[in-house]
Length: 346
Image 1: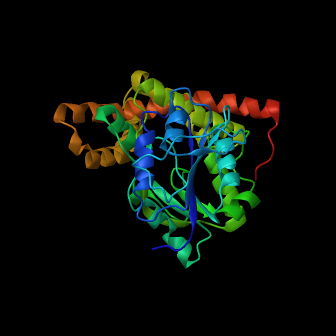
Image 2: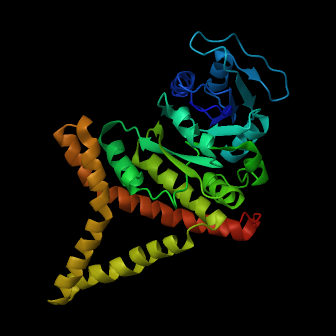
Image 3: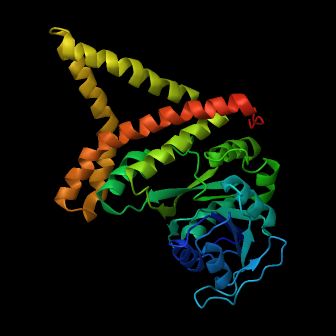
């Protein structure tokens, strides 16, 4: 069991339907955190009130007080809440880092549920000298669409190369001093802020140790519209931060040049050109869905056969829909960067 004292930080916004599950998971950790610091970004659905009822004391400087401790929250773990209306995720995490009292910080996110040994496993590498630690994350889907979406968008452990893996701030631990020295999370960035933080931390402290069993489970987006909005915002964040330009360029070339050329050849060219073009299109589609299909088959035990067929048919549509959202979002972020000239983060 790790002897390192650790603060757990979380940012929340309108999470009334999931906050109790998150708190229950933190309360049940086999390695109890020394404290939990939660930053609320201005919830209007009762999330802040629920946190205060559980036993938090507001530390925003305004002196607001909370209720007594809930019977389900361990009184030995201080639960502190910062009310920061209007703070984005990056600003909320920085506020939590500043307010934390322990030398190590573990970050997770609203909407997740944590296995009881999550923090124990996440902090284990710290006892052997790790400067910071990358945990892992897994899909917690409901229904056919969410299962297919998780299979397309989320890697499994066998997909991960720890030497290049960039952790999500759903499951990561770091020394407070290193996070402050690295500049924290970029508050000018509304999405992809944890990727910039990771790259800053690599410069500050080297590659993270990998703790693959420190798993945070979270639910994929529940609808096509929500998923499209999510990927649009992710790509807009890439454009703002000047991330992954080559990947986005390949996507534009593929959809705007290669696919139209091959489709036109398949429909209008005579054999053997049309056959070759058709085969190339089919091979491209197969390469897009081969790995997601493997993941789906391994994850569809909770689905009946009609749902499995729906999920399978959704795979290529999810890929194309997500790519289209990224193609719309990236130039918006790129133009924003040209206009506002954000600070260099490298």
